[in-house]
Length: 162
Image (tube, rainbow, N blue to C red; front, side):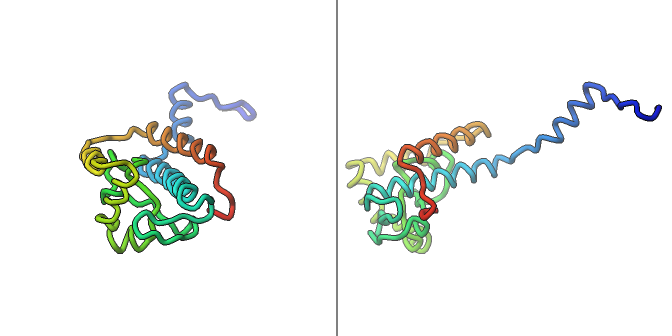
């Protein structure tokens, strides 16, 4: 090859080079990102509902008021099953003690679900948790985008919150 002459790649080589340049994001990463945004939405929603502020919220099970950053998004049905992972009615703000140490504080959580959504809704959520659901990567991207928009509808997260 002569000096100064530009090297030409075949179409197949260009395609392979392009594929390598685009790093594939793992499904686990997409799921974690969607969960993180969903969790922020749940905690913001519950802060606004329970205290009227973005900065503090009340644990659904014990009633303690904590700063946004100290709250967790706790599931009514323990375990993070796909069918139930992003259930707005089945996930609420909880303190760490109730969510982790008391394993969700299920009896009190059940009463709170019934108070919020009506008699029998706890059974609806239990049935939902037994369904089988698989997320495609695009589903997880869509979930993250949806909850980003929902957070904005609620006024967004202030810097003091995060």
